[in-house]
Image (cartoon, rainbow over all chains, first blue to last red):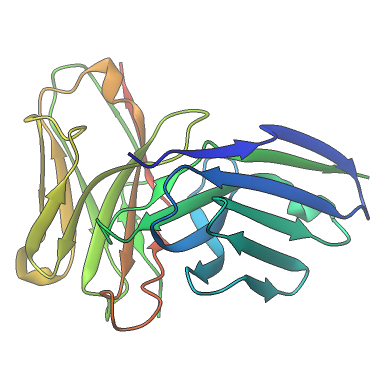
Length: 113
Length: 116
């Protein structure tokens, strides 16, 4: 059974700092991995999707990496802004089921002025 | 492309009542998923459809829950005889089928259910 863990559970950084969010998963037989952002009481916004054959994906100030063999992914946020404050969720799709996403519990990020 | 929409956004009901939620996926997406999210947790998979066929159901989906997707367009999720433990955010997502691209899942804004 796939299990996804995100560390840290919460993080507070001053504006302008670069930061890294971590995601680990127990079963390396994944089809892809998605990073999402969730604002309080809202739905999920997809940030980046990495296919199992890829090592990283970039979008603006965001860079996500994937090391499938070690079961790890990182989300790097450059030059953080107060508007980045949200919960960031990592989710994997396994090759076997190839349908559902298995989510971590998220990292709650606060960027302070 | 208007994105995934869900209705209602909030629902307050008394224990024992039935509730029904609706999800409208992105129009060209043939896969539709339901997830449930409780406070402080990540979403958990409930069920998914490819077109009108329900292909997988989680063990979380007790016999009080039923989902349909008539004609392969919108979907409904019904909860019968609601319990306080059903209080959660119910999220809908849609995607293209695997083999047609990344099959990235796009989520709606969710329906917040509170059972009193």
